[in-house]
Figure 1 (tube, one colour):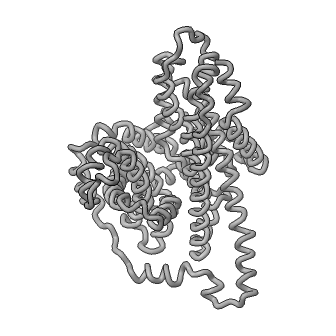
Figure 2 (cartoon, rainbow, N blue to C red; figure 1 turned 180 degrees about the horizontal axis):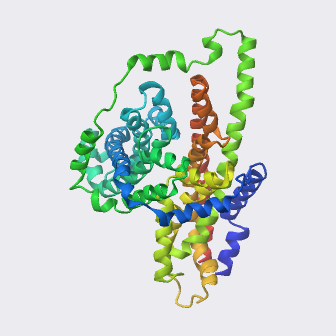
Figure 3 (cartoon, rainbow, N blue to C red; figure 1 turned 120 degrees about the horizontal axis):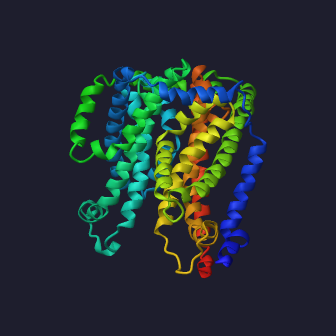
Length: 497
């Protein structure tokens, strides 16, 4: 077994990739601002946590509509995005559709909300479209991959009617994983619906932001606990028996969805997002000067800081995963430690990064620290849960060491490390998307400059920055896939076991 750990440490592709990304994160850290700028962070942290014991349940009726609105938007968004996603999955092999959907899902739902706010205003339609567009693209990709894994017949035996083949062969065979993923996306939809409140939609995030700004920490705790209870009890109230009732109730409760304004849409496409030099008919020299200032003052700092934060958060997420997963595995921990660890992980993985970063921002002040902590805790909790489940499924030799450290270092980690890296690089693109959006909290990532462009009504700049954000995410996704394929080719490690 010693040879297994030595192989990972000094010879394998796993080590080379790990060393490269740790080095990249260290360099990124040197160029990043991780300072604590608040005057008394520990006092603020103490006030926040002790407010947990000052919760006033009498305010619950006034906060309940925020939760209900969050659920209703999530339910409708899930229904329409899963429907459109399934239709698009049938055509996902088409390179143009696949490329277009990659662009759609690369833009965060908060950015979509900011776009639709300019066209349709502050209403339910904006909230739904902001979730349906990226979720449909995500559903299309994942549904396609699930259906590909359940190709029952050889291509020559499928017949000419592709729809019959899908609905009578593929879908029935893949129904269980399709349904399982759809239910998982509902939890994601709840989180996304909640954070739409930070751009003005009256979901949970709207009241959370208001309570934070007024230092009503007891209300913040009440809203968070309501949200955690909602996430934890999904299986009890969201199932095949209740779905139709909740779906039609959501339509009734949300009421006014707003209206499509084609004049606003045409103005947005034909005027608002046209670059200023073209719109103002500037000379080539003046237009070049405009773009140079925009490039040097906004594009370069935004891209640079987004990449820095992403790389630091990626390695922190990996470190947290490796440190925490033994606490939820019965191979390393007793029932009490596992129970407490599961609760902590559920809380952090149920909390959107945006909300966690907003919380830490109030405590530590504006820097990369709140964002990095939020990204680490949310993504690390998800990965620790997945790796912990895999650790439970491992079978050891009869003569394995009784020492927990030896069991971890020589028996468990070498066998799980490849899987751990695969999960980590799968989250890389997601961490990049969140790093960009966290700029809306005041960090100098792409989201900061996008938010500033909207505030100044420079929608041409906003659109250019959004396209760059999408392009960056597509690049990261492609690199991640290449790294994963590179790691999968490393089969020699199996000889060590």
